Amino acid sequence: MSIQTVTSTPFDDQRPGTSGLRKKVTVFSQPHYLENFVQSVFDALDDCAGKTLVLGGDGRFHNRVAVQIILKMAAAHGFSKVMVGQGGILSTPAVSCVIRKHGAFGGIILSASHNPGGPDGDVGIKYNITNGGPAPEQVTEKIYEHTKSISQYAISDAADIDIDQIGERRVEQMVVEVIDPVADYAELMQRLFDFGAIKKLFAGGFTMRFDGMHAVSGPYATAILEGLLGAPAGTVINGVPLEDFGGHHPDPNPVNAAELMALMDGDDAPDLGAASDGDGDRNMIVGRKLPVTPSDSLAILSAHAAVAPGYRAGLKGIARSMPTSRAADHVARELGIECYETPTGWKFFGNLLDAGKATLCGEESYGTGSDHIREKDGVWAVLFWLNLLADSGKSVSELVSDHWARYGRNYYSRHDYEGVASHAATELMDSLRVKLGALAGQDLGLYTVDAADDFSYTDTVDGSVASGQGIRLLMTNGARIVFRLSGTGTEGATLRVYFERYEADPAQHHIPTQQALAGLIAIAEQVAGIIDWTGRPNPTVIT
Ligand code: G1P
Ligand code: ZN
Image 1 (cartoon, helix red, strand yellow):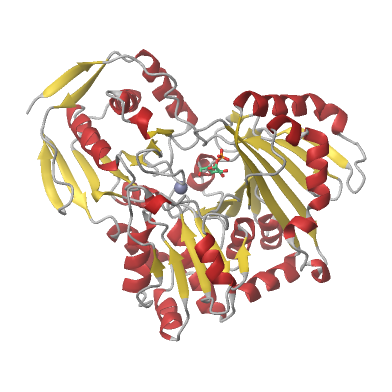
Image 2: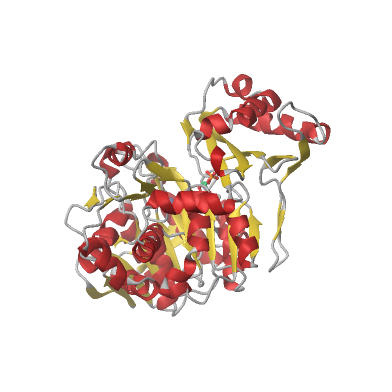
Protein backbone atom coordinates (compact mmCIF):
# COMPACT_ATOMS: atom_id res chain seq x y z
CA MET A 1 0.00 0.00 0.00
CA SER A 2 1.24 3.46 -0.81
CA ILE A 3 -0.05 6.94 -1.48
CA GLN A 4 -0.20 8.02 -5.10
CA THR A 5 -0.26 11.49 -6.57
CA VAL A 6 -2.47 11.53 -9.65
CA THR A 7 -2.39 14.33 -12.22
CA SER A 8 -5.75 15.88 -12.91
CA THR A 9 -7.31 18.98 -14.44
CA PRO A 10 -10.41 20.99 -13.46
CA PHE A 11 -13.88 19.98 -14.59
CA ASP A 12 -16.57 22.46 -15.59
CA ASP A 13 -18.73 23.79 -12.82
CA GLN A 14 -18.04 21.86 -9.63
CA ARG A 15 -19.64 24.59 -7.58
CA PRO A 16 -21.48 23.05 -4.63
CA GLY A 17 -24.93 24.60 -4.28
CA THR A 18 -27.24 24.85 -1.28
CA SER A 19 -27.21 21.10 -0.92
CA GLY A 20 -23.76 20.17 -2.18
CA LEU A 21 -22.74 19.12 -5.66
CA ARG A 22 -25.40 17.25 -7.62
CA LYS A 23 -24.83 15.82 -11.06
CA LYS A 24 -25.98 13.06 -13.38
CA VAL A 25 -24.26 9.73 -12.73
CA THR A 26 -22.78 9.98 -16.23
CA VAL A 27 -20.99 13.20 -15.25
CA PHE A 28 -20.12 12.19 -11.69
CA SER A 29 -18.61 8.86 -12.66
CA GLN A 30 -16.15 10.27 -15.21
CA PRO A 31 -12.55 9.41 -14.33
CA HIS A 32 -11.15 11.81 -11.67
CA TYR A 33 -14.44 13.74 -11.32
CA LEU A 34 -15.26 12.70 -7.75
CA GLU A 35 -11.56 12.67 -6.83
CA ASN A 36 -11.19 16.29 -7.96
CA PHE A 37 -14.06 17.37 -5.77
CA VAL A 38 -12.93 15.41 -2.71
CA GLN A 39 -9.38 16.74 -3.07
CA SER A 40 -10.82 20.26 -3.22
CA VAL A 41 -12.84 19.61 -0.06
CA PHE A 42 -9.76 18.36 1.78
CA ASP A 43 -7.68 21.29 0.46
CA ALA A 44 -10.35 23.70 1.68
CA LEU A 45 -10.20 22.13 5.14
CA ASP A 46 -6.44 22.77 5.37
CA ASP A 47 -5.33 20.28 7.96
CA CYS A 48 -6.98 16.87 8.01
CA ALA A 49 -4.21 15.11 9.90
CA GLY A 50 -5.32 13.14 12.93
CA LYS A 51 -8.99 14.02 12.46
CA THR A 52 -12.14 11.90 12.31
CA LEU A 53 -14.51 11.98 9.35
CA VAL A 54 -18.02 10.49 9.07
CA LEU A 55 -19.00 8.99 5.73
CA GLY A 56 -22.17 7.53 4.29
CA GLY A 57 -24.90 8.01 1.76
CA ASP A 58 -28.42 7.20 0.70
CA GLY A 59 -27.46 3.97 -1.06
CA ARG A 60 -28.19 5.15 -4.57
CA PHE A 61 -26.30 3.94 -7.63
CA HIS A 62 -22.56 4.78 -7.40
CA ASN A 63 -22.71 5.10 -3.57
CA ARG A 64 -20.47 2.11 -2.94
CA VAL A 65 -17.90 3.06 -5.57
CA ALA A 66 -17.72 6.59 -4.17
CA VAL A 67 -17.31 5.35 -0.57
CA GLN A 68 -14.23 3.31 -1.54
CA ILE A 69 -12.63 6.24 -3.37
CA ILE A 70 -13.26 8.63 -0.48
CA LEU A 71 -11.84 6.16 2.06
CA LYS A 72 -8.65 5.84 0.06
CA MET A 73 -8.36 9.61 -0.35
CA ALA A 74 -9.05 10.24 3.34
CA ALA A 75 -6.24 7.83 4.20
CA ALA A 76 -3.92 9.69 1.83
CA HIS A 77 -4.72 12.97 3.59
CA GLY A 78 -3.85 11.75 7.05
CA PHE A 79 -7.28 11.40 8.64
CA SER A 80 -6.86 9.15 11.65
CA LYS A 81 -10.31 7.63 11.39
CA VAL A 82 -13.37 7.42 9.16
CA MET A 83 -16.67 6.23 10.62
CA VAL A 84 -18.60 4.75 7.72
CA GLY A 85 -22.16 3.44 7.80
CA GLN A 86 -22.50 -0.30 7.15
CA GLY A 87 -22.96 -0.90 3.43
CA GLY A 88 -22.10 2.77 2.87
CA ILE A 89 -25.51 3.72 4.28
CA LEU A 90 -26.15 6.74 6.49
CA SER A 91 -29.10 9.09 6.23
CA THR A 92 -28.35 12.80 6.17
CA PRO A 93 -29.76 13.31 9.69
CA ALA A 94 -27.78 10.30 10.93
CA VAL A 95 -24.52 11.79 9.58
CA SER A 96 -25.30 14.99 11.45
CA CYS A 97 -26.08 12.99 14.60
CA VAL A 98 -22.91 10.87 14.39
CA ILE A 99 -20.64 13.91 13.76
CA ARG A 100 -22.03 15.64 16.86
CA LYS A 101 -22.13 12.62 19.12
CA HIS A 102 -18.58 11.49 18.38
CA GLY A 103 -17.07 14.96 18.05
CA ALA A 104 -15.93 14.25 14.49
CA PHE A 105 -14.25 16.96 12.46
CA GLY A 106 -16.86 16.72 9.71
CA GLY A 107 -18.66 14.38 7.39
CA ILE A 108 -19.23 13.56 3.76
CA ILE A 109 -22.75 12.70 2.63
CA LEU A 110 -23.28 10.96 -0.68
CA SER A 111 -26.73 11.85 -1.86
CA ALA A 112 -28.73 13.83 -4.36
CA SER A 113 -31.53 13.99 -1.80
CA HIS A 114 -34.88 13.59 -3.52
CA ASN A 115 -33.55 13.53 -7.08
CA PRO A 116 -34.08 10.22 -8.92
CA GLY A 117 -31.29 7.61 -8.73
CA GLY A 118 -30.00 4.73 -10.86
CA PRO A 119 -27.51 4.78 -13.76
CA ASP A 120 -29.51 7.52 -15.52
CA GLY A 121 -30.30 9.39 -12.32
CA ASP A 122 -28.42 11.81 -10.15
CA VAL A 123 -25.74 11.46 -7.55
CA GLY A 124 -24.32 14.06 -5.20
CA ILE A 125 -21.79 14.85 -2.53
CA LYS A 126 -21.88 17.30 0.33
CA TYR A 127 -19.52 18.25 3.14
CA ASN A 128 -20.85 18.86 6.67
CA ILE A 129 -18.85 20.72 9.29
CA THR A 130 -18.12 20.06 12.96
CA ASN A 131 -21.54 21.26 14.18
CA GLY A 132 -23.08 18.53 12.01
CA GLY A 133 -24.59 20.98 9.53
CA PRO A 134 -23.98 21.71 5.85
CA ALA A 135 -20.83 23.68 5.08
CA PRO A 136 -21.55 27.42 5.01
CA GLU A 137 -21.00 29.49 1.90
CA GLN A 138 -17.43 30.57 2.88
CA VAL A 139 -16.46 26.88 2.92
CA THR A 140 -18.33 25.86 -0.24
CA GLU A 141 -16.83 28.85 -2.10
CA LYS A 142 -13.36 27.84 -0.93
CA ILE A 143 -14.02 24.29 -2.18
CA TYR A 144 -15.17 25.70 -5.50
CA GLU A 145 -12.03 27.86 -5.85
CA HIS A 146 -9.90 24.74 -5.40
CA THR A 147 -11.88 22.84 -8.06
CA LYS A 148 -10.95 25.52 -10.59
CA SER A 149 -7.22 25.23 -10.17
CA ILE A 150 -6.70 21.60 -9.21
CA SER A 151 -3.77 19.82 -10.84
CA GLN A 152 -3.40 16.64 -8.79
CA TYR A 153 -4.93 14.58 -6.04
CA ALA A 154 -3.64 12.11 -3.47
CA ILE A 155 -5.09 8.63 -3.04
CA SER A 156 -4.01 5.36 -1.50
CA ASP A 157 -3.60 2.44 -3.87
CA ALA A 158 -4.99 0.04 -1.23
CA ALA A 159 -7.54 -2.56 -2.30
CA ASP A 160 -11.24 -1.95 -1.64
CA ILE A 161 -12.17 -2.72 1.94
CA ASP A 162 -15.14 -4.56 3.39
CA ILE A 163 -17.80 -2.03 4.40
CA ASP A 164 -20.51 -4.65 4.99
CA GLN A 165 -19.27 -6.07 8.29
CA ILE A 166 -19.45 -3.92 11.38
CA GLY A 167 -16.01 -3.48 12.94
CA GLU A 168 -12.64 -1.86 12.47
CA ARG A 169 -10.20 -2.21 9.61
CA ARG A 170 -7.43 -0.05 8.18
CA VAL A 171 -6.49 1.75 5.00
CA GLU A 172 -2.86 2.81 5.29
CA GLN A 173 -2.56 4.19 8.86
CA MET A 174 -6.20 5.23 8.98
CA VAL A 175 -8.81 3.31 10.98
CA VAL A 176 -12.07 2.62 9.16
CA GLU A 177 -14.84 1.95 11.65
CA VAL A 178 -17.88 0.42 9.99
CA ILE A 179 -20.82 1.39 12.21
CA ASP A 180 -24.47 0.39 12.54
CA PRO A 181 -26.16 3.22 10.58
CA VAL A 182 -29.17 3.33 12.91
CA ALA A 183 -27.83 2.87 16.47
CA ASP A 184 -26.65 6.40 17.39
CA TYR A 185 -29.66 7.96 15.73
CA ALA A 186 -32.15 5.66 17.47
CA GLU A 187 -30.51 6.40 20.81
CA LEU A 188 -30.98 10.14 20.24
CA MET A 189 -34.63 9.71 19.28
CA GLN A 190 -35.28 7.79 22.49
CA ARG A 191 -34.00 10.75 24.48
CA LEU A 192 -36.20 13.23 22.62
CA PHE A 193 -39.53 11.40 22.51
CA ASP A 194 -41.75 9.47 24.86
CA PHE A 195 -41.20 5.98 23.45
CA GLY A 196 -43.33 4.47 26.25
CA ALA A 197 -46.38 6.50 25.23
CA ILE A 198 -45.90 5.77 21.53
CA LYS A 199 -45.48 2.06 22.28
CA LYS A 200 -48.79 2.11 24.13
CA LEU A 201 -50.41 3.90 21.20
CA PHE A 202 -49.37 1.09 18.83
CA ALA A 203 -50.28 -1.58 21.38
CA GLY A 204 -53.76 -0.01 21.52
CA GLY A 205 -54.31 -0.66 17.80
CA PHE A 206 -53.12 2.63 16.28
CA THR A 207 -52.26 2.03 12.63
CA MET A 208 -49.74 3.70 10.40
CA ARG A 209 -47.98 3.37 7.06
CA PHE A 210 -44.48 4.76 6.60
CA ASP A 211 -43.38 4.82 2.96
CA GLY A 212 -39.59 4.50 2.81
CA MET A 213 -39.75 5.00 -0.97
CA HIS A 214 -36.92 2.42 -1.30
CA ALA A 215 -34.56 5.08 -0.03
CA VAL A 216 -32.42 5.47 3.06
CA SER A 217 -35.02 6.06 5.77
CA GLY A 218 -36.42 2.52 5.43
CA PRO A 219 -33.87 0.89 7.78
CA TYR A 220 -34.30 3.69 10.33
CA ALA A 221 -38.10 3.53 10.26
CA THR A 222 -38.12 -0.26 10.42
CA ALA A 223 -35.70 -0.44 13.36
CA ILE A 224 -37.47 2.29 15.31
CA LEU A 225 -41.18 1.87 14.46
CA GLU A 226 -41.40 -1.89 14.04
CA GLY A 227 -38.46 -2.70 16.29
CA LEU A 228 -38.34 -0.36 19.29
CA LEU A 229 -41.95 0.84 19.21
CA GLY A 230 -43.65 -2.46 18.45
CA ALA A 231 -45.63 -1.31 15.39
CA PRO A 232 -46.84 -4.32 13.42
CA ALA A 233 -44.70 -5.68 10.58
CA GLY A 234 -45.82 -4.03 7.36
CA THR A 235 -46.09 -0.59 8.98
CA VAL A 236 -43.04 0.37 6.92
CA ILE A 237 -43.52 -0.15 3.18
CA ASN A 238 -40.84 0.12 0.46
CA GLY A 239 -38.40 -0.11 3.35
CA VAL A 240 -35.36 -1.59 1.64
CA PRO A 241 -33.00 0.95 0.01
CA LEU A 242 -32.51 0.21 -3.70
CA GLU A 243 -29.88 1.73 -5.98
CA ASP A 244 -32.57 3.16 -8.25
CA PHE A 245 -35.20 3.65 -5.53
CA GLY A 246 -37.32 1.07 -7.34
CA GLY A 247 -37.66 3.54 -10.21
CA HIS A 248 -39.58 5.96 -8.01
CA HIS A 249 -38.93 9.61 -7.37
CA PRO A 250 -37.96 9.56 -3.69
CA ASP A 251 -39.45 12.92 -2.85
CA PRO A 252 -42.30 12.81 -0.39
CA ASN A 253 -45.07 14.96 -1.73
CA PRO A 254 -48.62 14.01 -2.63
CA VAL A 255 -47.67 13.65 -6.30
CA ASN A 256 -44.71 11.28 -5.87
CA ALA A 257 -46.17 9.33 -2.96
CA ALA A 258 -49.32 8.58 -4.96
CA GLU A 259 -49.66 5.03 -3.57
CA LEU A 260 -49.63 6.30 0.01
CA MET A 261 -52.04 9.11 -0.81
CA ALA A 262 -54.50 6.67 -2.39
CA LEU A 263 -54.33 4.53 0.73
CA MET A 264 -54.91 7.54 3.00
CA ASP A 265 -57.89 8.58 0.89
CA GLY A 266 -59.51 5.15 1.04
CA ASP A 267 -61.99 3.72 3.51
CA ASP A 268 -59.43 1.57 5.31
CA ALA A 269 -56.86 4.30 5.68
CA PRO A 270 -54.55 3.86 8.67
CA ASP A 271 -54.50 6.55 11.37
CA LEU A 272 -51.29 8.08 10.09
CA GLY A 273 -49.43 8.08 6.79
CA ALA A 274 -45.85 9.29 6.46
CA ALA A 275 -43.03 9.29 3.94
CA SER A 276 -39.44 10.43 3.71
CA ASP A 277 -37.08 11.23 0.82
CA GLY A 278 -33.90 9.79 -0.73
CA ASP A 279 -31.54 10.76 2.09
CA GLY A 280 -34.08 10.71 4.91
CA ASP A 281 -34.19 14.39 5.79
CA ARG A 282 -37.67 15.23 4.46
CA ASN A 283 -41.02 14.18 5.82
CA MET A 284 -44.61 14.14 4.73
CA ILE A 285 -47.40 13.71 7.26
CA VAL A 286 -50.84 12.59 6.12
CA GLY A 287 -53.95 12.03 8.15
CA ARG A 288 -57.07 10.20 6.95
CA LYS A 289 -58.05 12.09 3.79
CA LEU A 290 -55.88 14.97 4.92
CA PRO A 291 -52.31 15.75 3.86
CA VAL A 292 -50.77 18.14 6.40
CA THR A 293 -48.86 20.94 4.71
CA PRO A 294 -45.27 21.14 5.98
CA SER A 295 -45.87 24.74 7.02
CA ASP A 296 -48.83 23.68 9.17
CA SER A 297 -46.83 20.75 10.52
CA LEU A 298 -44.11 23.12 11.78
CA ALA A 299 -46.74 25.32 13.42
CA ILE A 300 -48.59 22.41 15.03
CA LEU A 301 -45.42 20.80 16.39
CA SER A 302 -44.31 24.19 17.71
CA ALA A 303 -47.63 24.75 19.48
CA HIS A 304 -47.43 21.33 21.18
CA ALA A 305 -43.67 20.91 21.51
CA ALA A 306 -43.79 20.47 25.27
CA VAL A 307 -45.47 17.03 24.90
CA ALA A 308 -42.08 15.62 23.90
CA PRO A 309 -39.52 15.10 26.69
CA GLY A 310 -36.76 16.66 24.55
CA TYR A 311 -38.70 19.93 24.25
CA ARG A 312 -40.37 20.12 27.66
CA ALA A 313 -38.35 23.18 28.58
CA GLY A 314 -40.06 25.14 25.79
CA LEU A 315 -38.85 26.66 22.55
CA LYS A 316 -36.19 29.36 22.32
CA GLY A 317 -37.49 30.46 18.98
CA ILE A 318 -38.80 29.15 15.67
CA ALA A 319 -37.20 29.60 12.27
CA ARG A 320 -38.77 29.12 8.87
CA SER A 321 -37.62 29.77 5.32
CA MET A 322 -39.09 32.83 3.66
CA PRO A 323 -41.44 30.99 1.26
CA THR A 324 -42.76 28.79 4.09
CA SER A 325 -46.21 29.90 5.27
CA ARG A 326 -46.56 32.16 8.25
CA ALA A 327 -48.58 29.62 10.25
CA ALA A 328 -45.65 29.22 12.68
CA ASP A 329 -45.46 33.00 13.16
CA HIS A 330 -48.89 32.95 14.83
CA VAL A 331 -47.70 30.29 17.27
CA ALA A 332 -44.45 32.15 18.00
CA ARG A 333 -46.38 35.33 18.73
CA GLU A 334 -48.56 33.51 21.22
CA LEU A 335 -45.58 31.80 22.85
CA GLY A 336 -43.83 35.16 23.06
CA ILE A 337 -40.81 33.91 21.12
CA GLU A 338 -39.12 35.06 17.94
CA CYS A 339 -39.95 33.59 14.52
CA TYR A 340 -36.97 34.03 12.20
CA GLU A 341 -37.43 34.23 8.41
CA THR A 342 -34.42 32.90 6.52
CA PRO A 343 -33.66 32.25 2.84
CA THR A 344 -34.47 28.83 1.38
CA GLY A 345 -31.97 26.12 2.36
CA TRP A 346 -31.26 24.42 5.67
CA LYS A 347 -27.82 25.97 6.09
CA PHE A 348 -29.36 29.30 7.09
CA PHE A 349 -30.82 27.71 10.24
CA GLY A 350 -27.41 26.54 11.49
CA ASN A 351 -26.28 29.84 13.04
CA LEU A 352 -29.64 30.38 14.76
CA LEU A 353 -29.55 26.87 16.22
CA ASP A 354 -25.89 27.15 17.27
CA ALA A 355 -26.57 30.50 18.92
CA GLY A 356 -29.51 29.09 20.85
CA LYS A 357 -31.94 31.48 19.17
CA ALA A 358 -34.19 28.85 17.61
CA THR A 359 -35.24 25.35 18.66
CA LEU A 360 -37.56 24.22 15.85
CA CYS A 361 -37.22 25.09 12.19
CA GLY A 362 -38.87 24.15 8.97
CA GLU A 363 -39.38 24.69 5.27
CA GLU A 364 -42.41 24.35 3.06
CA SER A 365 -40.52 21.73 1.03
CA TYR A 366 -41.27 18.93 3.53
CA GLY A 367 -38.34 19.74 5.79
CA THR A 368 -38.72 20.00 9.56
CA GLY A 369 -36.11 19.79 12.28
CA SER A 370 -34.72 21.09 15.53
CA ASP A 371 -31.55 21.84 17.44
CA HIS A 372 -31.03 18.10 18.11
CA ILE A 373 -28.88 17.98 14.95
CA ARG A 374 -28.05 20.45 12.18
CA GLU A 375 -30.03 18.92 9.32
CA LYS A 376 -33.72 18.51 8.75
CA ASP A 377 -34.92 15.14 9.90
CA GLY A 378 -37.66 12.96 8.39
CA VAL A 379 -38.02 10.16 10.95
CA TRP A 380 -37.71 12.70 13.80
CA ALA A 381 -40.74 14.61 12.46
CA VAL A 382 -42.77 11.39 12.25
CA LEU A 383 -41.84 10.47 15.83
CA PHE A 384 -42.78 13.97 16.99
CA TRP A 385 -46.23 13.52 15.41
CA LEU A 386 -46.57 10.08 17.00
CA ASN A 387 -45.66 11.55 20.39
CA LEU A 388 -48.28 14.27 19.88
CA LEU A 389 -50.95 11.80 18.75
CA ALA A 390 -50.18 9.54 21.73
CA ASP A 391 -50.29 12.42 24.19
CA SER A 392 -53.44 14.11 22.87
CA GLY A 393 -55.50 11.05 21.99
CA LYS A 394 -56.72 13.04 18.98
CA SER A 395 -56.59 12.18 15.29
CA VAL A 396 -54.40 14.03 12.79
CA SER A 397 -57.40 15.86 11.36
CA GLU A 398 -58.67 16.87 14.80
CA LEU A 399 -55.26 18.29 15.66
CA VAL A 400 -55.16 20.22 12.36
CA SER A 401 -58.68 21.63 12.57
CA ASP A 402 -58.23 22.55 16.24
CA HIS A 403 -55.06 24.37 15.24
CA TRP A 404 -56.79 26.32 12.46
CA ALA A 405 -59.70 27.19 14.75
CA ARG A 406 -57.31 28.62 17.29
CA TYR A 407 -54.72 30.35 15.10
CA GLY A 408 -56.49 30.77 11.76
CA ARG A 409 -55.62 28.93 8.55
CA ASN A 410 -52.78 29.89 6.25
CA TYR A 411 -53.89 28.58 2.86
CA TYR A 412 -50.72 27.63 1.08
CA SER A 413 -49.51 26.09 -2.17
CA ARG A 414 -46.35 25.86 -4.29
CA HIS A 415 -46.47 25.60 -8.09
CA ASP A 416 -43.34 24.22 -9.76
CA TYR A 417 -42.45 24.60 -13.43
CA GLU A 418 -39.71 22.03 -13.92
CA GLY A 419 -37.22 21.68 -16.77
CA VAL A 420 -37.79 25.20 -18.11
CA ALA A 421 -35.14 26.62 -20.47
CA SER A 422 -32.61 28.34 -18.18
CA HIS A 423 -32.52 31.60 -20.14
CA ALA A 424 -36.34 31.87 -20.15
CA ALA A 425 -36.48 31.33 -16.38
CA THR A 426 -33.75 33.92 -15.78
CA GLU A 427 -35.45 36.43 -18.08
CA LEU A 428 -38.78 35.93 -16.33
CA MET A 429 -37.15 36.71 -13.00
CA ASP A 430 -35.22 39.68 -14.45
CA SER A 431 -38.35 41.15 -15.99
CA LEU A 432 -40.15 40.82 -12.64
CA ARG A 433 -37.27 42.51 -10.86
CA VAL A 434 -37.53 45.47 -13.20
CA LYS A 435 -41.23 45.84 -12.37
CA LEU A 436 -40.85 45.75 -8.59
CA GLY A 437 -40.91 49.51 -8.09
CA ALA A 438 -44.05 49.93 -10.19
CA LEU A 439 -45.86 47.05 -8.49
CA ALA A 440 -45.79 48.53 -5.00
CA GLY A 441 -49.12 50.17 -4.24
CA GLN A 442 -50.82 48.72 -7.33
CA ASP A 443 -54.47 47.71 -7.10
CA LEU A 444 -54.80 44.25 -8.67
CA GLY A 445 -58.52 43.72 -8.14
CA LEU A 446 -58.94 41.32 -5.23
CA TYR A 447 -55.57 42.32 -3.81
CA THR A 448 -53.52 45.46 -3.48
CA VAL A 449 -49.74 45.17 -3.47
CA ASP A 450 -48.34 46.60 -0.27
CA ALA A 451 -44.68 46.00 -1.06
CA ALA A 452 -42.66 44.20 -3.72
CA ASP A 453 -39.02 43.25 -3.26
CA ASP A 454 -36.28 40.71 -3.82
CA PHE A 455 -35.73 39.05 -0.42
CA SER A 456 -32.45 39.83 1.25
CA TYR A 457 -31.39 38.30 4.56
CA THR A 458 -28.94 39.53 7.11
CA ASP A 459 -27.82 36.78 9.46
CA THR A 460 -28.44 38.04 13.00
CA VAL A 461 -25.53 35.98 14.29
CA ASP A 462 -22.63 36.63 11.91
CA GLY A 463 -23.95 39.61 9.96
CA SER A 464 -23.53 37.92 6.57
CA VAL A 465 -25.94 39.01 3.86
CA ALA A 466 -27.69 36.77 1.32
CA SER A 467 -29.47 38.77 -1.37
CA GLY A 468 -31.61 37.84 -4.40
CA GLN A 469 -33.41 35.13 -2.42
CA GLY A 470 -36.83 35.37 -4.05
CA ILE A 471 -39.18 37.99 -5.41
CA ARG A 472 -42.05 38.78 -3.06
CA LEU A 473 -45.35 40.46 -3.73
CA LEU A 474 -46.75 41.27 -0.31
CA MET A 475 -50.43 42.20 -0.35
CA THR A 476 -52.07 44.64 2.05
CA ASN A 477 -54.10 41.86 3.73
CA GLY A 478 -51.01 39.73 4.41
CA ALA A 479 -51.40 37.44 1.36
CA ARG A 480 -48.19 36.76 -0.59
CA ILE A 481 -46.83 35.50 -3.87
CA VAL A 482 -43.16 34.50 -4.04
CA PHE A 483 -41.16 33.68 -7.16
CA ARG A 484 -37.79 31.97 -7.05
CA LEU A 485 -35.61 29.66 -9.10
CA SER A 486 -34.62 26.31 -7.66
CA GLY A 487 -31.00 25.85 -6.73
CA THR A 488 -31.13 22.06 -6.62
CA GLY A 489 -32.35 20.92 -10.06
CA THR A 490 -30.00 19.25 -12.50
CA GLU A 491 -31.93 19.78 -15.75
CA GLY A 492 -32.67 23.28 -17.04
CA ALA A 493 -34.31 25.58 -14.51
CA THR A 494 -37.20 25.09 -12.13
CA LEU A 495 -39.42 28.06 -11.39
CA ARG A 496 -41.18 27.89 -8.05
CA VAL A 497 -44.17 30.10 -7.33
CA TYR A 498 -45.50 30.14 -3.78
CA PHE A 499 -48.95 31.36 -2.72
CA GLU A 500 -50.24 32.17 0.73
CA ARG A 501 -53.42 33.69 2.12
CA TYR A 502 -54.54 33.91 5.73
CA GLU A 503 -58.10 33.10 6.76
CA ALA A 504 -59.12 33.68 10.37
CA ASP A 505 -62.76 32.58 10.07
CA PRO A 506 -63.27 28.85 10.84
CA ALA A 507 -66.39 28.89 8.66
CA GLN A 508 -64.03 29.49 5.71
CA HIS A 509 -61.54 26.74 6.52
CA HIS A 510 -63.07 24.04 4.33
CA ILE A 511 -62.37 25.62 0.93
CA PRO A 512 -60.15 23.49 -1.38
CA THR A 513 -56.67 25.05 -1.35
CA GLN A 514 -56.31 25.84 -5.06
CA GLN A 515 -59.73 27.47 -5.02
CA ALA A 516 -58.87 29.52 -1.95
CA LEU A 517 -55.74 30.75 -3.74
CA ALA A 518 -57.24 31.20 -7.22
CA GLY A 519 -57.16 35.02 -7.04
CA LEU A 520 -53.45 35.02 -6.21
CA ILE A 521 -52.69 32.40 -8.86
CA ALA A 522 -54.31 34.60 -11.50
CA ILE A 523 -52.30 37.61 -10.33
CA ALA A 524 -49.03 35.66 -10.60
CA GLU A 525 -49.77 34.93 -14.25
CA GLN A 526 -50.87 38.49 -14.92
CA VAL A 527 -47.75 39.97 -13.36
CA ALA A 528 -45.10 37.47 -14.46
CA GLY A 529 -46.42 36.07 -17.77
CA ILE A 530 -45.44 32.55 -16.71
CA ILE A 531 -47.19 30.81 -19.62
CA ASP A 532 -45.43 32.98 -22.18
CA TRP A 533 -41.96 32.68 -20.70
CA THR A 534 -42.08 28.96 -19.90
CA GLY A 535 -44.34 27.78 -22.70
CA ARG A 536 -46.21 25.81 -20.02
CA PRO A 537 -49.95 26.23 -19.62
CA ASN A 538 -49.78 24.56 -16.18
CA PRO A 539 -47.28 23.84 -13.43
CA THR A 540 -45.53 20.43 -13.54
CA VAL A 541 -46.07 19.83 -9.83
CA ILE A 542 -48.49 21.43 -7.40
CA THR A 543 -47.94 20.85 -3.68
C1 G1P B 1 -35.24 22.69 -2.41
C2 G1P B 1 -36.25 23.21 -1.43
C3 G1P B 1 -35.54 23.81 -0.23
C4 G1P B 1 -34.60 22.78 0.38
C5 G1P B 1 -33.68 22.22 -0.69
C6 G1P B 1 -32.83 21.09 -0.16
O1 G1P B 1 -34.42 23.74 -2.86
O2 G1P B 1 -37.11 24.18 -2.02
O3 G1P B 1 -36.49 24.25 0.70
O4 G1P B 1 -33.84 23.33 1.40
O5 G1P B 1 -34.44 21.73 -1.78
O6 G1P B 1 -33.60 20.04 0.29
P1 G1P B 1 -34.67 24.51 -4.25
O7 G1P B 1 -34.72 23.46 -5.33
O8 G1P B 1 -36.02 25.18 -4.12
O9 G1P B 1 -33.54 25.48 -4.35
ZN1 ZN C 1 -33.25 15.17 1.24
